[in-house]
Length: 53
Image (cartoon, rainbow, N blue to C red; front, side, top):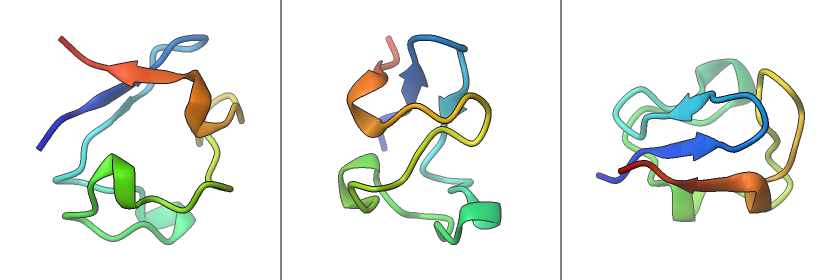
C-alpha cells in the first residue's frame, strides 16, 4: 500500500501501521481515512499530503 507524506512537517502515514491514536486501524489505506482526519503531528488536513516516492 502507498505511503503518504505530510508536506508541511514530513510525517509519513504508513497504511500498514495506521494511526491508532486517531482511531485509524492498521491496514487502512490513505484513501479510506475519513476526510476530517488531520496530521497527528501538525494538524493539517488530508489535502496537504502527497504520495511518498
